[in-house]
Image 1 (cartoon, rainbow, N blue to C red):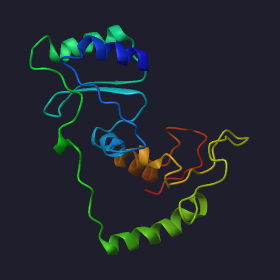
Image 2 (cartoon, one colour):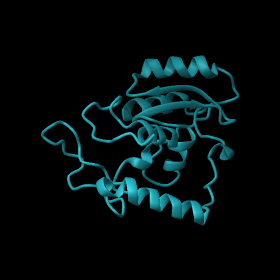
Image 3 (cartoon, rainbow, N blue to C red):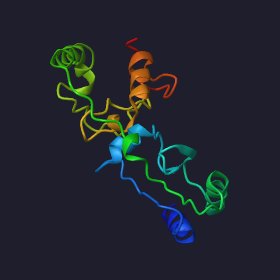
Image 4 (tube, one colour):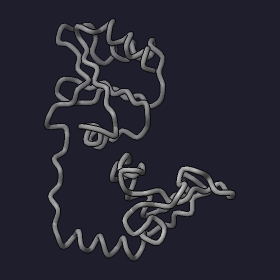
Length: 174
């Protein structure tokens, strides 16, 4: 997808800002959460006010992107901008000591047996087991938990993963 994005950037360079986001570094995690990005690669057409105009998840060809850009923004001189407005990124929440303590207790009672006392997950968590399921992943920076929006994580914890991944052993806690 990189050569396609480079071509789009050359073609629209005077009217379009391309912001490449590494979901693992810098502002990436906050932007992923702010725009509820669920898949990679994702292309979001965002106006200068931070409003999302179009979204693509998965690889796209240049013609599809070109048509979407023209449909969303036209040929105006107002310019195009894929960078979200500064206020579109949510602030870091403050932590309440009592809620953190309660969360630690709930994690210890319900999650630690599978995901590890310190959220380290199980060894070889990326390798499927004989039954097709995967060992529980870590919840630290080594895993992928933080890539998912809060709503998706709440749904997985509440309902388990059977609907998403039938071989999953993640139980429902709702």
